[in-house]
Length: 228
Length: 257
Image (tube, rainbow over all chains, first blue to last red; front, side, top):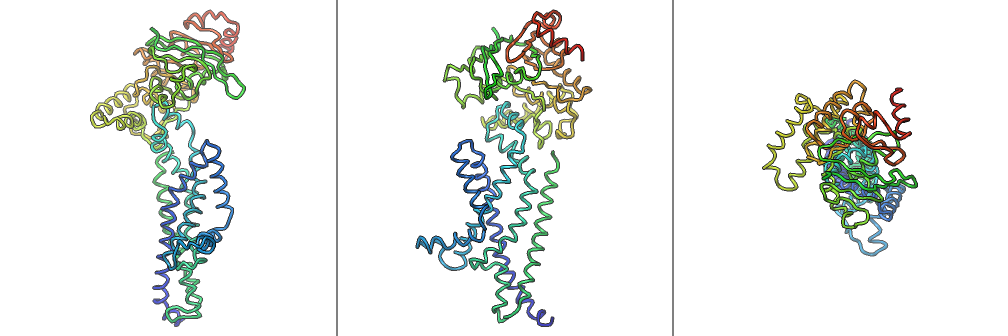
């Protein structure tokens, strides 16, 4: 116990640095996947067969294979197969590769939620807009969008909470996120080695952060409660 | 001259021909009631007039302008549809108010977007707000303008939907069974608003199952059956002295209810 208390400040310091990387990946994934998911959703809703089928195939591949494999492919494929290591070495290259894999993966999940959300808005809403002389674009942004958002907040919340924990997968390409930082104390880091408790302790970070995320999303859900 | 001329409108869904050549005219300020059993094509007819469906054949002319002619490709451009739609207004059976907006916002949204697009919003904003408020007085909901649709009864929602259609100043206002989704005690307030509109010489086409109302408000009635106009005439003629056997049967079924 005494040892742990001695190690605590150093471990917290190291874990905080790792957690910043976790948060960065989390934020970049959301910022990229929210809009990209919408574009993919429009693709799968397209009346042009070739577009909707290609999109469907893409979603099937991304959702049908492990994110961990996708991370490895995105990171190693350019260098090892194409002999064109676009990511470069170092932490920033790994972060870029991880971001790309995460954004693509989460876009596909989001797109399916969006699609369900768009389809669940009654067609009468769109028709009401049409007969009032509104354009399709006006109808989407001024009529459909908010109703869709209201409907997708609960399922998107689920994905966001999963994403917080999924960021740990980036460790597979040695991204120095919080689990990587925790595990480092087993092999040796900051003159501490053979300590497993920092790894276990990382769970606490996820738990607290997901608590904050949950409260914020519940707040958003309440905010949209003013209409039905 | 007629404000609306509909000639030989046909519409097929799959292999079911829903409209088998509908032809009629409507005078400015006239009120046309369309009656008939479910599935006779009444709603499809209104949807064709509002360009929610494209007829497979026929001609639609409003104020002398050919809006739609199946055989004239110039009238079929998608880009023109939006402008053409504005000749017509449509009040839906299920109201279709926008739930995230207040009653007033529902009425203001379409003209506001239209004015912003044409950069006249700043100049016309005040006038539009006045007009919207007048409409709320007219529909008897001046005190409920800032309520959201879910805070209003069905009858109130439908009255807001009427105001929302009116603010676009359609030449012809269409109603698709405006009271069919309402509790019986709420139909009266909606019919009263429509009745007042007819007194103000609003040109209207009303698809309805309210036979008494259809007779009282209209100066012309069409009875549709199986996708054709089975009989048309003045209300007292069609209701009092129907010529066609099918019309008689239809009206008899209603009288028994």
